[in-house]
Length: 418
Ligand code: AMP
Ligand code: MG
Picture: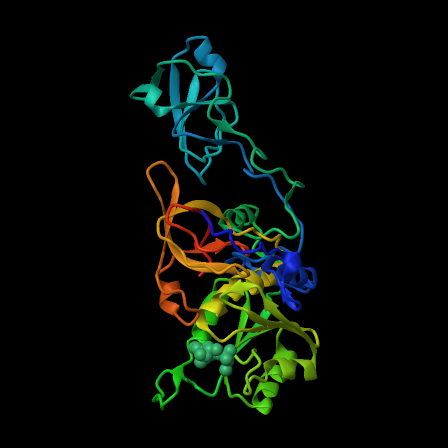
């Protein structure tokens, strides 16, 4: 149940200069240049990287006919004829039996061992009674049972991994099984970040009146570590045009992306947007969202720029909604839509129409699989505790008002994001 007494607001009726979250996302994502450069890495470094080549199997996997079971390799026609079978040797994985197997003979065989010439089937040992060197078989066995054939998994010449594939643990094993130890992958985006603010102190420094510790740098560092990027920490930057410019210059030389926090509003010590305007191209946006209204986006030469707000929760929300997907796109990843679920909200929520809210909630599924969510309490954009206690955003649409307990809401779980 939402309060609908106020005039409805839509993306088309936002105040001038204000964008909806979706409009801002489209503008940002449409402007992304994908990284084209690649580098060769060993499989040990390839997890999560984006493949920049097609991988063709250079050999058959498995390379040889081998047993799927511990048992006895035999010629099927012999048991069909009811012959007693004599064990003439053993085939181990990596130690083939090299002798010739004649009618009436069989070979003890282990899983993965080469199936000897002169045999065509493997009977599992649980179906065999062995007396000395003779075996008796119980149950039925079909021709070729428990025999794996060369190329059954991959054939030499097969294209097994496509260009642009994000490599996972299964891919690493597959490459190793083909004897491939190195692959070409896209270069990682280089992402520089810094905090701005005269009030910010580093951990270990004594807080003077009015000071606070710089928490955004740690948050951003943590968020970036969840992505496959090269991280460049530009530190805490003072509120002077020179200091901000110095940080921007460094990023322009070294980074594909620069992320700043703070100094992006219209306060007298906010130099981020002005510096961006001087050195690059600026798009300053008010976004109809809470937390995170001001956002500066632009370019500094070839460096993509994100000026995030200073308030810690706004930093996290704007990073997750705009910066993270932009970085994924740079890596040529198809945008994974962050999973959203419909949930029953068990606590009332305060909300003013006109901005899309990303309130912080604690969600869980009940015994029937129905999602429930409750608010973490204080929702100020400075209250990092609301984020740290939460396991999801509660996304409330632009036009909605207060939400009574029991209403249906959309939740976005944080799984894997933070
Ligand atoms: P600003 O956008 O610079 O006006 O900052 C908005 C609010 O966020 C102020 O209360 C700042 O003190 C706070 N803030 C800015 N940067 C940081 C930071 N790196 N860590 C923690 N709080 C910050
Ligand atoms: Mg500031």
